[in-house]
Image 1: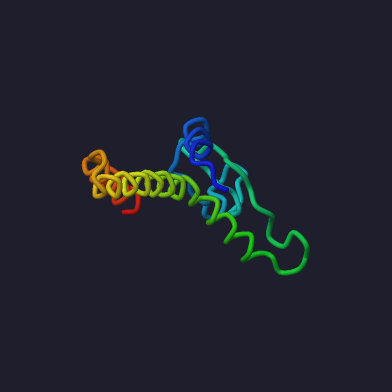
Image 2: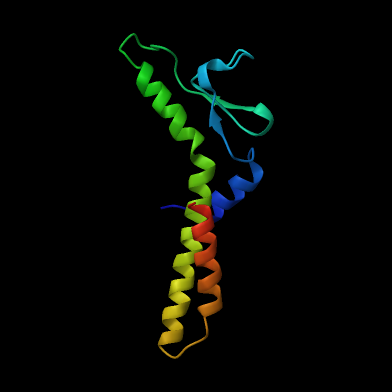
Length: 116
């Protein structure tokens, strides 16, 4: 199960996004399998050209691209969670309970911003 509290805590504590795959090394001893964050801070590196001599070159580059998307995916996940919470509130309102419309509108705006 995903812990949205943990995602939020780690996103705040970790290196801020946006992260990117280092294209063709860009010097500094980094390879195209390296991920860098703000200020070109190294985040991690995935495999190598053929780390098992089994043709993993393209797979390692794809893994680097996937990792680089993490900050965006965290923002989307947190916004989607807020949206889901707001929809729950709206449904309660529609059943005659408390008003969740303002929260729903704010959450939908955050989701749209996070996914653009």
